[in-house]
Length: 482
Image (tube, rainbow, N blue to C red; front, side):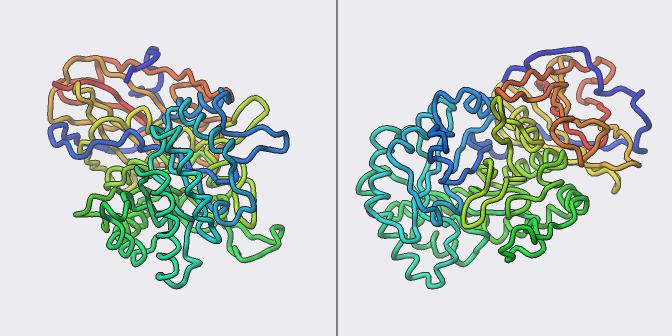
């Protein structure tokens, strides 16, 4: 990947930026201990099926000539697009042939693979087969896999669910002999997942991916069963932002992983979070749409990829779907007068895009308890090294953190570059208007002109790099090792 623009180092390793937080944090990067290769479709988005339908003006959201949306997908590095959500089973209207063609024309223009869901609840096998046949005939290169239904916990009897799922699958396979499926597209459900793998995780069953949903921090509201939207009581935004950035979040991820992702070990199936975000029920205002979400998303994506997931699809859109629709507070971006206005979460995805390609290599952090630092590293085939640092230390008392990166291999040269993610005043409550990556914002037309900074020679030695990170910031450092 090209480094892009290079400007003199402004903020990286500048000892004049405030006081430092005591002892430096140390990151040990083992470039010779290569682990797993990151899937090209690691970063993805998830949309409601209803987003395929034309708007009130007759214009479709997903279309090949939607230049701003195509550009934004490419800018953010989005390579997977899942279509499903509540509206696949609860919506009143199914996508027409024209809707499906427009979606896949967009997918081709944006260079994404599609996970396409068909209706399970009261679903028509022939309608599903028709859609699969159309996709197979015209867009076989764009379909990743099919999903049948969404969060099928409404089927209390597994035998009924299995029979319905199998009937629709068989009809789709008859129309698309190459059809592959992911399932069950459910909130963590170890028993259902294990049954699906056991019965369908073979060549005849066509199940190739275990797909799960996860909103690790729970509901946005204290009373989610309330039907009167005006009476919904949100959780405290400040406390919710803290939950997103605390190390205890890893325990939540690990529990979900152990319940679900471990089930594919020893099988040919992959694992993917096909619908995920911070808080369910449309997201929590002041948390899901705050700068904290940028730091959280980059760390969350890397954590799951480093724990075996092939990718994550962040649920997004202008509004959520289903029986109740609300503005999507957890959106990656929303429609705006001149294109799409990004939310802070988009910057977390872009930070991953700048460093999350190639093969993962171990990056071990040794820091004091008050230094909340995450680190990940990847290595390219040409020995290009990308180190992503996420400093989640924040608050009025937080000071810049010195980070010493120690490598097990010497640097090939002294050409080391970095790019920084930050918000004004290092405020995790900030909205997107103050967030920059490489000194630049992502524009409504999908363009971004962030600049890499060349690090001073004084910060580089034979096998080490030293940087100073601002509180609540992210950074990608790129170098080459021998």
